[in-house]
Length: 116
Image (tube, rainbow, N blue to C red; front, side):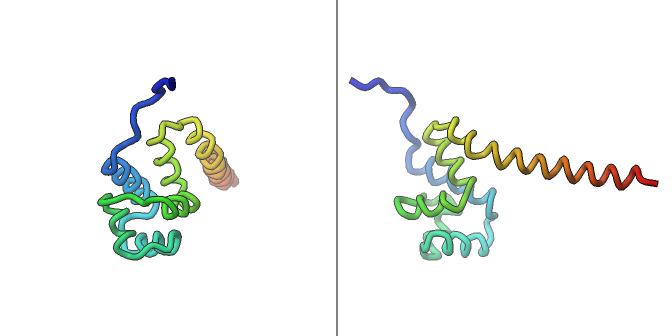
């Protein structure tokens, strides 16, 4: 007998809205975002619009192609699957490099201000 380790996976609406929030945060909600989704996944325009609105979520091949290109979609999907340690492994390295770039930019600005 298997033990139940976690709650059930989100229903279709929670899945669709969770990915929509992630995609909107990364791409926005403009027509350019729709075109980007179409290019990434080879989906048609109506399908990509539905993903951004949260009307329905990507399935199968489209989901695989989407998370291949979108860190936000991958993080959202892993979070819904309660694989938070996997989220940390995928997001922390990029967060660290972003922080290092920010620190370097601050150091450059400070050294430029302090020079006579």
